Amino acid sequence: MKAEKWQKVASYQEKRTDQVVRCHLCPHRCVLQQGAAGICKTRVNQSGTLYTTAYGNPCSLSIDPIEKKPLFHFMPGQPVFSLATGGCNFRCLNCQNWQISQTSPLSLNSYDLDPEALVQRAIGCNTSMIAFTYTEPTVFYEYMYDTARIAHGKGLKVVWISNGYINREPLLDLCPFLDAANIDLKCFEDAMYRKLTGGRLQPVLDTLLTLKEKKIWLEITNLLIPGFSDNPEMITHMCEWLFANGFEDTPLHFSRFYPNYKPNDVPPTPAESLLEAKGIALKDGLKFVYIGNQPRLHGEDTICPQCGHTLIQRYGYTVGTYEIQDGKCNRCGKSVAGIWHS
Image: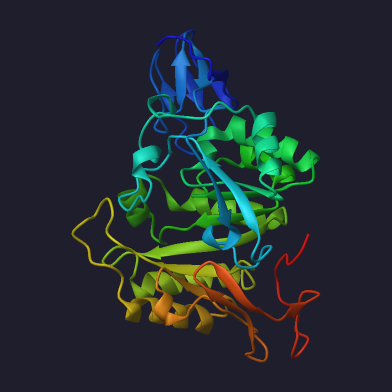
């Protein structure tokens, strides 16, 4: 493979022989022969050294509302500068961005922005936050890390929207430059995880625990796919695990599935399944449970867990009523977990 200007020596690699290298960025721990790329399609072995081809070449840039990530308890109503490169370390049957996630960054049209230029672009857009999102940011780790470090140095907040499939060491190295994360917890059964994504459940749970340990603001998304991840018993086990491990104040977003990639023969998630899942989560002690991708259910409002008052009304990605002051319910004074202002 010819040298490209985007290529940079990758972090977290182990030389096995002169021509064979193992990647230690994510739990796949790919062992790569000369010329081979990892599952992520971004890390390539060239002459016994691992390089990343996802550095300085974002394929997608946008200004989004923070609610789109979704993050509901982190700087509500604020815009966030969002970016991605190509590639992903999962092969999700339900992928929504397969056009960019399931291909090499080098096969896509991209911008030419090193980390410093990227941060300046965000500042020029009058945003105070940068989000690594759309595809899986772990696969452009070096670009994300360098950008996050520069962004923090300039006073910007950094947001990570991820499948959580990353090893502990690189995650710990990234955490000092993270302010918030949303982790997509695909389901709560290892066999189903492998079927849906090609990955395993436990590493994602480990990521949740690490983010909690490091006090990164965290929200969790669970996509309910009929026949795959909408089993009430599975949802119950997930919610019980979250409560038992101290995530009762962590917002949980149940999201409606729409057929868009694979499996395209599965119908959209019925409203009844979303409402049932929300009921299970509340019954199991989780305080902030949301329903996404189904506006008519009005499941995106923030409700005070003590008095039941509507604290934040949302219309799509727009914030309406806002009745939280100094992190507390305006009516009863109950503290509401979140980061509500800079």
